[in-house]
Each structure stands twice: as structure tokens, then as C-alpha cells.
Length: 213
Image 1 (cartoon, rainbow, N blue to C red):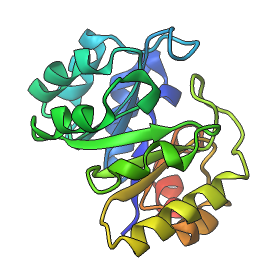
Image 2: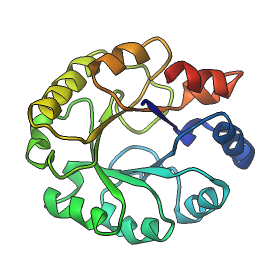
Image 3: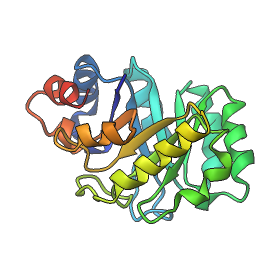
Image 4: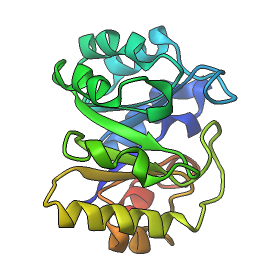
């Protein structure tokens, strides 16, 4: 079953509680929170107080993507909020396997995130250990970017590795996702859609979410 995780980076920050409540009622499975530090990516987003507030509003699990140079500094804080999923980028840690298990030991699903220019070879040795892989279909840092077409082939190769090794990790995709490319992404092997502009700029959140499912 396809899951949808709206990216709150595209929400109206002046009316955040209203937007989040509406998108939850519309049938979202998760809320996707992009944490950016202005170093690993050229943008700043949410600090801990904002994430805490989002957690008090949300009635569905939080899906946190750490686009930061020091991901391990966030794990215990996020565990105290009982977030469901944390993903980080392999280039930001020294010991990939160890980092995955730091997250899993806190009772949180652990994922690794790959940028469009990152090869699957960066994570092949830990596919048995992760709960999900987040494939970025745009370069990280900003919402509203166009989908990179080579993502289909990358996801299909990852899905093939999953099948060959008889593994159960989920494939999540983030960036430029919409109702037109969703069918092809599902065919390639995607299980979870992260969508920002497509949902939050829609006249009807429920229709946008259902079109992805």
C-alpha cells in the first residue's frame, strides 16, 4: 500500500497549525519534516522548538529528514518526541552502519538518503540494516523544484537489489512528485511519496493525496 508523507516545507508557515491539521484530515500517513542547517544544504528550516510544536499538533507519525552535518546530535531529542522515521545522508557520518543502529536502538525506523548525484554503491553494504531508503529526485535544499528524470532508473535498480536480496526496506522518494509521475514511480518500486507543492498548493488536499495513492 502506498503511503503519503506531505512535506511541510511547502506549508504556509504563517498558518502552520491550520495547514497541518487540514493535511492530516485529508488522509496523510506521515508528516515529512526537512531539517536543514545551512551547511550541508544552502537553506535553514526548522529548529527544535518548531519540531516540538509540530509534534503537539500532529496526530500522525513524523518522518524526519536530517539534511545536517551533525545528524547524531538530533537523535535523542527526536526519540523523546517519539518520531517514527529518521533519515540522514551517508556523507555526513563517519561510520554508516553504526549510525543506523544508533537510530534503531532508540526504537525509530532508520533510513539513509541519497542525493541525485549519489550512487547506490554508497549504501549497498547496509541495505540489510536499513528500514527505508530515501531517494531525492531533486537536489536538496529548496521546495518546488522539478523532478529529475534519471530517478526512475535509480529507483528501479534499488528495487531490483531489494528483490534479489529478499529484503523488506521501503523506498521513499522526495522531490517534484505529482499525480503524473506517481504511476511510473510506483512501477519502479516506490512505497512512500513525499510531496510538498503538489499537495499544499492544491485546492483540495484530499484529492491530491488520493491521486498519489
